[in-house]
Each structure stands twice: as structure tokens, then as C-alpha cells.
Amino acid sequence: MLAADRSAMFTATVVIAGISIVVGVLLLLIFIFYLFGKIVPVIEKKSKASEEKKAKRKAARAAKKAAKKAARSGGNITETETVSAPAAPPVQKAPVPAPAPAPVVQSGISGEVVAAITAAVVATEGSGAVIRSIKKKNVGGRNPWSAAATSDNTRPF
Image (cartoon, rainbow, N blue to C red; front, top):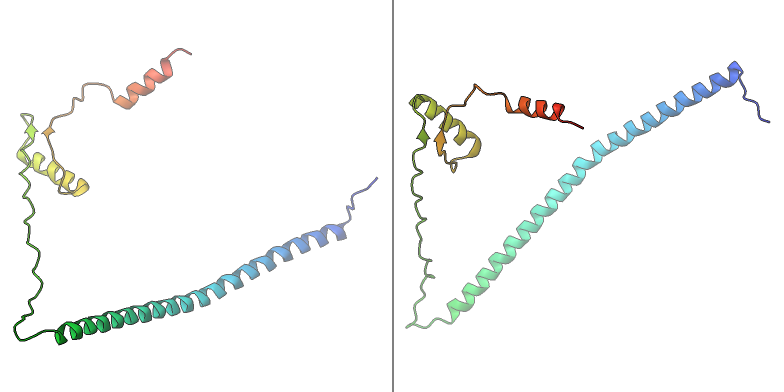
């Protein structure tokens, strides 16, 4: 049968070892994150330079290709031929949307309230929102959430 060692020396050794392991791992993590903080910006700078280099090469290839194409077409033109710029595609006008109908407003609501409600809706939903009607809320009834809670709490099992 095994008996637990309950001496003060053993307990102190376990506590000191546990604390030193936790502190050691914490210091290791701090060092790892410090290295990441030093390495990541260097890697980002190299990748950005690489992307810029690729973009420059791609632009140079496109310019070279355009120059070859211009040289080929320029050498084959006779005196009777003329070079014309490619025709621009016909410009199509975007259809103008019909103005939205004015909202149906209940009597007793001022124009300022309608303007404020419209401005709030346009600010939250965007300029494509359409307000169809504005009515006063009937405050004589019970709050819908309160009615739902009452019906849920009083229904039979």
C-alpha cells in the first residue's frame, strides 16, 4: 500500500516546481511573441516588394507586347490604307427610375415628422428605401412582448 508523503519539504518542493514551470512557460511565450513581432514585419515587407516587382514585370511585358503589335501593324500599312481608332461602344443611358409615390400619411402627423422619419429610414436603409405609409401607433393596447410573456406563462402544461 502506498502512503502519501505529507512532509513540509515535499509540499514546498511541489509548490516551487509548479510556480517555476508556470513562470518558465510564460517567459517562453513572451519570447516567442517577441520574435513574431520582429519577424512578421520583415516578411510583409519582402512580400510587398515581391508583389511590386511582379506588377512592374507584368506592366513591362504588356508594354512590350503592345509595342510589338504596333510595330507589326505599322509595318504592313500601305499608302491607301488608313488606321482608325476602334469604334467606341455606343453609350447607353441608364434608365431613370420613376419617383417613388408619396407615402400615405395619417391625419394629424405633421410634415416635419414625416421628413424626420424619411431621413431616418434613408440613413439606415439607403436611398433605395421606399416609405409607403406612416401611421400613429395605437398605444392603448398591451405591449406585444408583455402579451406574449403572459400567454406563455399562463398556458396549461
